[in-house]
Amino acid sequence: MSGYAGVVVIARDAQEVMAPLTRPDDGREWHQCVTRVEVGMSDAWTVEFIRRDWDGLLAHLEALPWPRPETVQVLIGGEDDDCFGLWMMYGGRLIEVPLPHTLRHQGGSAVTGRLTRTDGSPAGC
Image 1 (tube, helix red, strand yellow):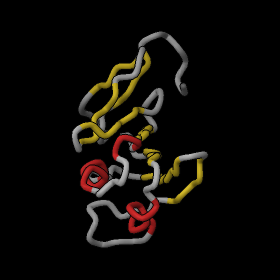
Image 2 (tube, rainbow, N blue to C red):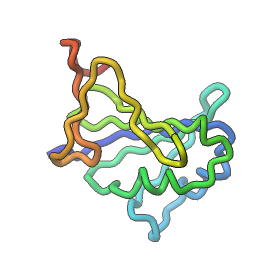
Image 3 (cartoon, rainbow, N blue to C red):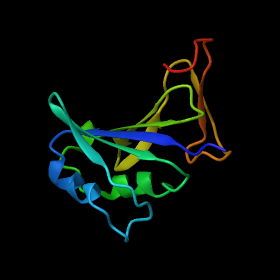
Image 4 (spheres, helix red, strand yellow):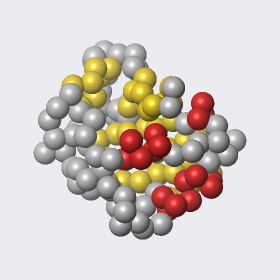
C-alpha cells in the first residue's frame, strides 16, 4: 500500500495565501503543515504525507484566493510513482498536465493513482 507522498506547491506572490497552511489547523481535512522554500522569482512550499490522509489537499488548494493563479504549479510524487506528476490551475481548477512518456493508473491505494514512465527509462526521473 502506497503511503508516502511528497508535494511541492510553487506560486508567485502567494506568501499570504499559503501562510495559514504553515500552521496546524484541525479544520482542514488533512493536517500536515507546509514548509516555505524560496526559489528564484517564485516561492515554493513542501510537505510530505506519511499516510493516505491528504484526500482534500487538491480541493483545498483550488479554493485558495491565488493572486496569480496562472503561476500555480503542484508537483505530487508518491512512493510508487516513477516521477512527480504536475497539476496546474486552469479555469479555477487544478488539472493534471499530461507529461510526455508517462501514464497515470487510476485507483489503488494512492490518492492520485500511480504515475509510470512508458519510455523504458529507469524510475526516479
